[in-house]
Length: 529
Image (cartoon, rainbow, N blue to C red):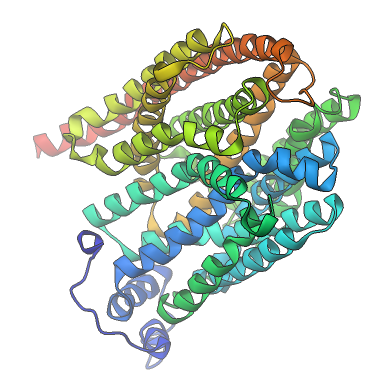
């Protein structure tokens, strides 16, 4: 972690020193310093207070644990179904209840970090997440497990937005870019690793607990992170003047909820009328939210989603590209897990380990793409989307006839993992690096919400396509009749995923063009001077 340090000073100071640095200058005719002055004084004190590498390790470990928990349950689903006799809709809510609460409350969690302090909200969210994980591991019924998964999501939504804010306020320059790369790797890599960890824990069957260790493993990790974070995370500045934007919360949260719930429950409930009405209502609420945010900004207030963030060159197209890559990401891993376990009859461990090449290549590319010259990086994103499409079409060809795919399957998954990282990590870093530090929390809430919605949309859209083509999952995994149906469904779904990847590539091209157009006038002006 030494290459991420921004200060050579390692001595720790008490949080009182931070408060003194923040409050200095308020008396003696100086008045209350503005936000930029407070942030500058806090940053100077923070560098004396904590080693940046230690801070990064703590917050990224919390991030990894929360992201991993969104995918690890996919592999555990058959065991939960058998252990708790969960219905199809109940199992969907166990899997997606976490993501629903997480996606709905992320923007709120970001603003609460500004108001109450990022350190306090990170630790509060981590404590709630850890306690809910303990409850999930001990749950005796499907209803109780669903409730605790929602609480887990609330904890994650409280914790995760603070991660990027702490990174933005702690690092600068090239150190910030490297920290952002690690953040991006953890954000997406946790989804892949979750498939592997879930398979390992379920196959180990620790103490004959079957699926329960998937949740209980979070408890000791959470306790260690809480103890470390309490001692080592800095107490940063607060922005109480920004307000909570109640009207924004009352329109955005129901809008997200009205979109996510029918996407999650639509397929097992055969797409009822209330689901379509709910999604239409989501669009209306989203329009109300945009109108309320514009009016608040015009009055000089602090909207949940500052319009200036989306107006930054290339940010809107970049967020659209991130949505595309995460939709493909979530959809591919969900349907492939179904194909491996229900279609080919593989064990959770075997299915989980099948994703290892993707996880490995994703990590390698995420942590090394910055070695490329700067002029090649925008093309890396575009090439990543194109490579994803090639890998997915290869996967469709390999699995079409009902076979296992052999060595080619691992090669294709390695290619997909590498190309997903090539598209996601530079794109995420480029978008976040354009965001001013003062807007870090709000930008985090927006971008991570978009990523989570994309995962839900990917699972719902491509999962529905697969299940409609394959039919009801069999009671006996690997049955010959279902194996052929599943292979056909998987092949068709991979073709659709490839088309989505190409659409994301088109948005990446648009982002590159708009970013270059925005920087060209500045270069011309500087050359004239």
